[in-house]
Image 1: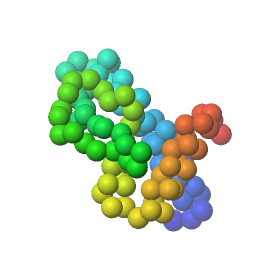
Image 2: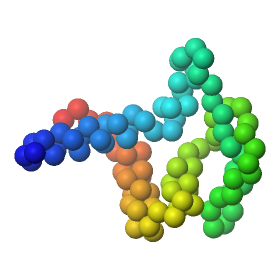
Image 3: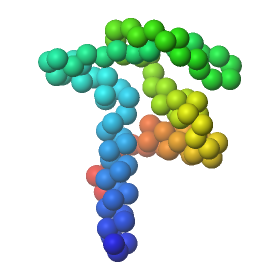
Length: 97
C-alpha cells in the first residue's frame, strides 16, 4: 500500500475514533428503539478504579476504557499513548480537509 493508502487508512481510523467516542455511543439509546444503556458501578480511587460488580441501568458518568486497559495489563506506554490520543481527539476541531 502506498503512502496515500496509509494516509487514507489513518484518516478513516481517526474518523472512527472521533465518531465512536463514549458520548456518541451513549446517545444511541435516545435515537434507536430497543437500545438501552447499562453500566457497571465503579469506585474511583486515587490510583485508579475498582469495579463494584453491580450492573445498573443508564450510561456511566464517563468512559473508563483507558482505565480498563490499564487493569487488563496493557503496557504503560500504550496507556500513556491512549491518554494522549484521547486528549488530541477531544480538543481537536473536526475538519474535512
